[in-house]
Length: 287
Image (spheres, rainbow, N blue to C red):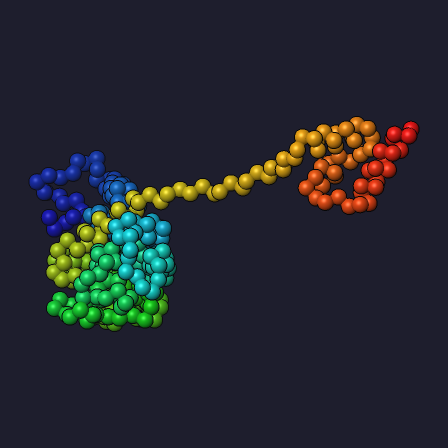
C-alpha cells in the first residue's frame, strides 16, 4: 500500500515476471488510457486531473453550456461569451486550465445565479474571501470581470504550482496559500487532499463536482451553422411582346447588339436612341 509506483518483491501478489522489463511502458499506456477516458485532460497514473495545462474546451462550449443551465446569468459588466474568453486568456497567460477555472465558477456561483455571500456586482466568480459566516457582500471585490477572473486563475495557480506569477498579483489571498499543495482538481477540497490543504474547507467532494461540470462542458456539442448562400442573380422578367420585338429587330438587322439593348429594358431610352432605331427601320423599309 505504501508503494503505489513500484514493484514490491515478496508481496503476496507479485506481478508476473514478463511484466518486469516493461513496467515503465505499462505505466505510460495506463496513463494514456486514463487521459483518453478523461476527455483529453492531463492525468496522473491515479487518474487525477491537473489544474495546470492547456484548456480543452472552447469559449463557445463554455458559454453555451452555462446558458443551457441558466438562460439569464447575472453578469452586469460583461456577456457570458466575453467572460468565457477571459477565462481562457487569463488561464493561458498563467499556464492554468481556463476551462477548469470556468467550471469552478459555475459551481461557486450556481451557474451565475449567485444568492450566497458574493454579489454579482463584485466580479468575484469563485467566492474569494467569502468565508463561512461572512455577511452578504463580505468577500473580495474586483473592479472589472477580467480582474476577477485573473484573481481566480492566480489563486488556482497558488495551489497547483510553485511557479511565479506572470501578471501582477491581484489575488488578495494569494500569500495565504501553501504553494503547490493541490496540483489536482480533485485535491481542491481539503478533506480530499492528502496534504490537508484546499480551496474549500472541509470541501468533501468539492473537486469531483468541478470535474463533473468540466466533463459536461467538454461533451457539450456546439451547433454547426452553415454559411448563408448568396442568392443567385436572376434576370428580370419582361413582357413577352418586348422580347419578341427585340428578336424581330435583330433578325431584321436593325439591331446588331441585342445584349446591350436587353440590359436597357428597364431603363429609359433617350430620344437619340429612338431616332437611331427609327432611322434604321426607315432605311430597311426603303431598301
